[in-house]
Every structure is written in structure tokens, then in C-alpha cells.
Image (tube, rainbow, N blue to C red; front, side, top):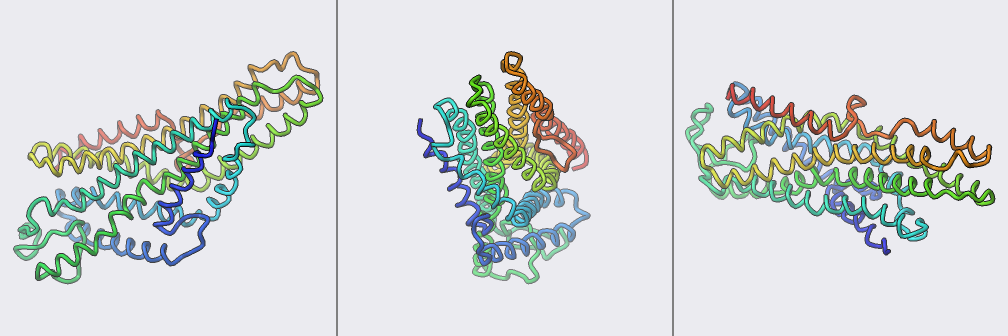
Length: 385
């Protein structure tokens, strides 16, 4: 069984991160500063627009529909940049796992490739869906009238519609200026698409890689030799590998638990807003905009589900190591081997977890809880707007 294609996932992650200038193994700052400053200015203008019309609840909801995505994207890009050194260590740490000689048989390779395939499928599906949603949202003004009456917002009677709800500190007076400003905003499309879901592809890749290695480790424990001459070497390799995987798991949780709690809170609100817009567009018969928000809702739901799914996988695979020790023939082994097995049984009792703010352990039950909260928010929102 060939595992040479497994490393493709790292190459794909590199393409996404290199565009944003935050690839952990690249020390160049110019591209990152350009995109970061550009996007930071855009984010600030979104908030100026939000506070400008804070007394108009319907407009606030429309603003938050895009503003929350932009804010979460900005926070994620910042978090990945801050944790660049930690991510570099983890990226270097897993390089040897993509080599043929790291696996003893085809079953170990199959266990590793199973989780690698899940990560690849997520990137193949998640990024295109988010990119389509970002493009459709950017093109929304072009599907209708580019000039709209804004007298109800307290402005002059007419205004050109920009792709995003931002406050410009000058007035667009002609069509040529409008085209220029509209085109100037196009860089937000890939930044939002890659920043919102593309950045998390590396986190998902690392966690699923960790799950694959835990699955391989469980297989090695189940097939640990009874030969006293080879037992000590094999057992040492298993213990050292397990300690390495625990270290990677703790590093991931330390680096991302704060951003994950922000994402969970933000996505519960985004699901609520996505549901509200889907209902509003369906009722008004705006089919083009309805398609936009279908992709929008799919992107948010997919990312939230991915967070919780990888957390569930991590819990399950770390628990399987515990089961592998318990179900082995430890009771038939010599006393010194039995003592080592008992120590490991105690050590592996607590499963590895990925947490959100050290408060929630990410799992499928977390996904159900967040989805339930989102629907409750939606019910309240529909009563007020």
C-alpha cells in the first residue's frame, strides 16, 4: 500500500496559508502584513457602519450576517500568526509519519490513510463551498440594482451599493469611481474564503493526523510481541510514540482553545443569522440571494461539524489505546511485563481531548448543543425583526 499521496494534504495547506502569508515554515512577513492591514482596515469600516446604524435592528442583522464572518476570520488569521512557532514545531514533528518506513505492515498504513483521506475530503469540499459562498456574496449587488434609495437610513436619497456594508469617508459620485471601489474590495473574497475555513484545514489536518497515529499505536499495542528478547524494544517505542502524541495533543489544545471558544460562540450566532436570511429570502422570492445563503449556511455548518467531529475522533482513538491495553493478554505475561502494562493502563485512563476555552470538550454532543442554541436564537430573532 502506497502512502506517497498522503503528504499532498500538507502541500494543499501550504498553498492556502502561503496566500495569507501565515505558513508556519515561511518567515516572510511582507505578504502577511499586506493582507492583514488591508483586512484590518476593512473590518474596522464594517464596525463603523454597524455603529452608525445601531438603532436600525433590521440593518444591524444584515450587517452582522457578514460582520461576524469577517470578525471570526480576522481573529483566526491573528491566532494562527501568533501560534506560528508552535505550528512550525508540530509540522516538523509529523514529517517522519509520511515515510513508508514508519509503518510495519499494510494494516498500519491503512489506519493512517483512513484519517488522512478524511482531511483531504474536507479540503476538497469545504474550501470550494466557502469560496463559492464568498464569490456569490460579493456579486450580490450585481444581481439587482447597483443604486438604491437610502433615505430611510438618514443618508442622501440614493447611494451605490457596495459588496460589503462598510462606511466610506467620501461619497461615490459617479459610476467609474463605483467600479474602482467595487473592484478594490475583491481581495476580500479569497481572504474571507481561505481565512474562514482554509486556516482551519491545518488544525483539522493535524488533529486527524494525530488520530491516525493513535489508531496505529493501538494496533501496535494489540500486536505486542510475547518474545522477551524483543518486548523491551517494542514497548519502549510504543511508550515514546504515545508520549509524543500526547505532547502534540496538548500543544494543539493550548494553542487553539481560546480561538475555538470564540468560534463556537460566533458560529452559533452565524447559524442563527443564516437561518434567518434563508427564511427571509425564501419568503421574498429572491432566489439568487437564497442560493448565496444556502452556500453560506453549508459553509458555517460544515466547519462547526468538522470541529466537533475531529474532537470526537480524538476522544475515540485515545480511548481505543486504553482498550488495547486492557484487552491484551497482559495476564499471561511475566511479572516485569505485567508491571509495565499496569502502569500504562493507569496512564491512559484519561482520553485526549480538544477543548474550547478549557470549558467544552469538542464532540458530536457539542455540535448538537450549539445547533440547538442557534435555533433558540433564531426563534427569538424572528419575534423582534
